Length: 280
Image 1 (tube, rainbow, N blue to C red):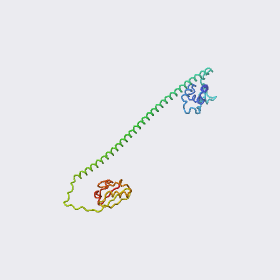
Image 2: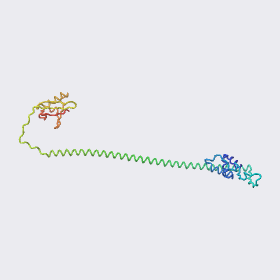
Image 3: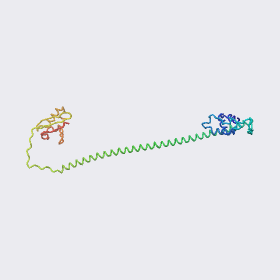
């Protein structure tokens, strides 16, 4: 009972003190206290404790013979009596245990603080490593995007260059075709003049069609001796324009007639027997 009282006086719960004494074979409060400190983090440390058969909570262990001993049974040697401590001795022993408990608690707190410090250092190192990895990933992503942008710009430049080259090739082909046609015309010998020419047919009418946009064509029937001034006057009257602003063009051969050509006859202008003019 003295060991149990000592442990409880030091602040240990009765259940823990009884369990520690039983687990250490009731060999003293010092061993019981060491067991409590060693197992204080066990999940079942505070579960209700039942002393094994033949033992009394808070007392010394008993053997089966001692528990079942009857007055008629053979006498057994009595267990060695523990020395009785004085009040001063018990107080000194309790004080020594309290000092030891305080030292163990201080050591435990120091170990916990060191473990927390190391865990914080590890956490910071892991966070630093994660930050470095994240920065590296962001850097790689920026490089990938920049490379894709450069590739896209290069592809656009290549397509533009191909288009320009195709345009230039088309122009060169057209120039070559035009030059070949010109050379063919120059190489063709002029037609030989007939030995006897037929008299030119005399036309008495000149039919002129003037096309305009928008509007329907203007049909004029004149004589070969009529002038372009007659045509311009009739077109201006029909179209509601100033004669000086009227311009007429011939598609083939390409030619443009204005008020300056008013005195030219239709025959001399090559508009006999018929012609199609465009009103501009």
